[in-house]
Length: 130
Image (cartoon, rainbow, N blue to C red; front, side, top):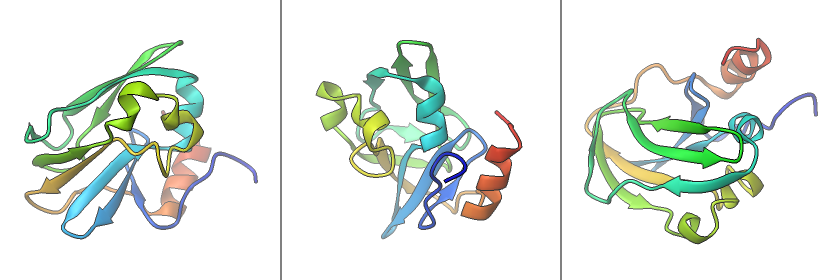
């Protein structure tokens, strides 16, 4: 493997979040690349279920031993679920970013725009774009 893992079953943002369709909802987390850059995540400031979110706006903040980072909404919509396991185990975002480390689910009010497919994201990531 030449770089961080890119899963084929989801799309990606240029801010290094992944988006997976879950029925009518979208599940969001951060990519393997993002968790590696952040290093050890020590706190996830989860949004409130029912919160309204705006495409491109910050939904929550991740705190690591190195820095803090925003996680952005891929579309306008409403938060319908959060991964409450992250309150006690924020390190799941590092250990399993594409599985148990998912962060929130939302119901979009329209399709997300500007998402990259897996191959396009892998090229974007390899280009060193941050």
